[in-house]
Length: 239
Image 1 (cartoon, helix red, strand yellow):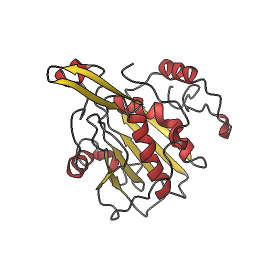
Image 2 (cartoon, rainbow, N blue to C red):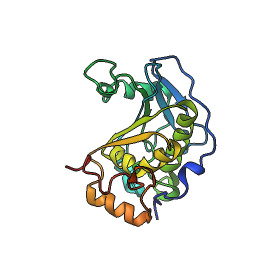
Image 3 (spheres, rainbow, N blue to C red):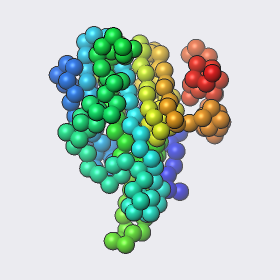
Image 4 (cartoon, rainbow, N blue to C red):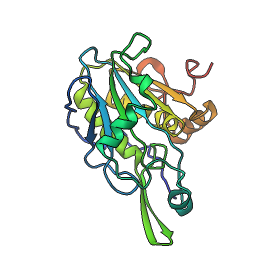
């Protein structure tokens, strides 16, 4: 299979993380050690920390998907799949297209939150756990579909940073929306005492989420009686 959906222990696999350190309310690029983008280079995230509150917003970038030599290397249907990310690139993205989510003004419900921007560089909707080799005109090419593992590593660092948080919001659109749905349970595992909300724009449908919950064979979470994925009976996401 080109990609395996990771549904193992998740938060137990990443190990302890190192707290983020950055100037307050200044976008800063941070390399995530042990992570892999599609081309094997490390994931770089952007963080914007604050002392206004302990709330956290984690944003998953969208940008298509790829699954074979044609889609990954010829058509290029997934964002950053062949790119080596830099701090400058990621900070620029965080402060452009989605910047309205991170504005510290009265119109933004998350104006006082800490922000974590996760770029998309694995072609697997932030959900994969596989390294595949494809045959191309220039020879064999590996693609690291390791979005799930990368997310675990980011969450481990977040857990070391935000030790007293009681509220986290995951936000994503398109492939980022899929990432929100498939990683909600990981976030809840890293923050068992916090409320973890999810805003999935143009990602999974309710039927998709119900099917994913069944496929993972997870039982209801003991806390607050919610399904472990957080979606399958949630009217708050699906009116």
